[in-house]
View 1 (cartoon, helix red, strand yellow):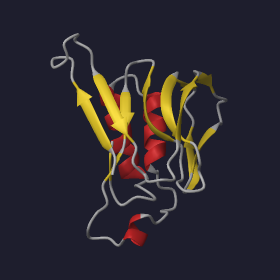
View 2: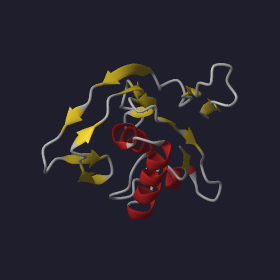
View 3: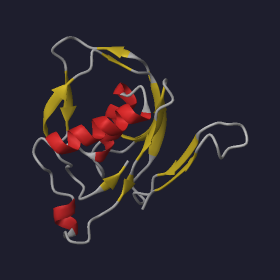
Length: 153
């Protein structure tokens, strides 16, 4: 399972906020670090979802640095952790629900959002941590989680 450590500004010697994340998906989870530039999207552009339909794309997305899954034949999605130009950080830790079988836990739910998409959307769209949390909450209510029984962001 993954591990994320967050140190708040009141707990660091320099007043900085720090985050460390280890992605432990197993032996098939090679990652790369990538800087994604700010992007401007056409009015009718969509953000494609792995599970089906897409979301309306933001007019402009933030610049960010993230860790990305290198080999996608083993795991769907892309972004696993990162920080954007506004200082908003996000990481994912898997948490399978014990009430579900492993097969049901990884079922694709039509129109749902997968954990890597939540990470990417927060990095692209949130200017504050609160905006990131609200975005995740709204998408969970509207679309639900797909390919994972539970996740912590």
